[in-house]
Image (cartoon, rainbow, N blue to C red; front, side):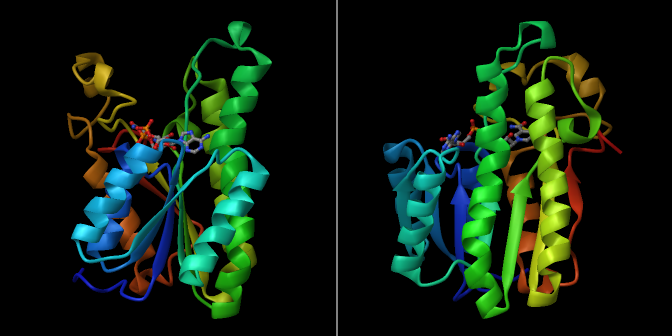
Length: 247
Ligand code: NAD
């Protein structure tokens, strides 16, 4: 795909301060989009915004907790005030609070569901109106292979990531006639801050047919593909970026 294919498009990426979200934001900027970056840590957001401006694209930031409805509404209002439209929404912000079910506290469940799943609903609802008016939109939700396969010690996380898939397919059906697609990307084992400490786990690598963890760039490439104007006939899909792990 050539650079410049997303010129005139505005992308809102959550969890854009580091890891997969940062790689996605930079890749969409390389494709020509302007970026509105949302996460919790201002200094990280500012650093990513600087990198995007160095690529010649506009970048603005909002510090927000994506689990909170009023903060999401404020962030989207801010994005619309600055850019007038949001064409591409990437719901990427996510957390884990891993423990076995017998030890899982209500708070472990609620914080993971609210941060990973409720946030995607809140942002999709807030952005869909403008996308419908402009008859163009790309909603890309970051799920996980764990949402397809389950994982011991991750009941809360797996439920949130499976929920993302149901949300994505329902959005796809509701919004298809308005030129809006909704797809999920399901990363497998990707080396980031979240997983760095596991990177040398050879037992885990044995489960991956390609034999190695993926990179944040692998995920960003998939998001860029789904964000493209030319991916308009692909909706309601889950694209695994997992080296063959969950096939
Ligand atoms: P990360 O921890 O490196 O980054 C997460 C980002 O989300 C950070 O910028 C953080 O500030 C932001 N965030 C978290 N909670 C937030 C909140 N309440 N409000 C606002 N921002 C918040 O994680 P990552 O590895 O880059 O993962 C990104 C996404 O990819 C997550 O949804 C994760 O579940 C998913 N994923 C990651 C992997 C992997 O192997 N790393 C695999 C499958 C899925």
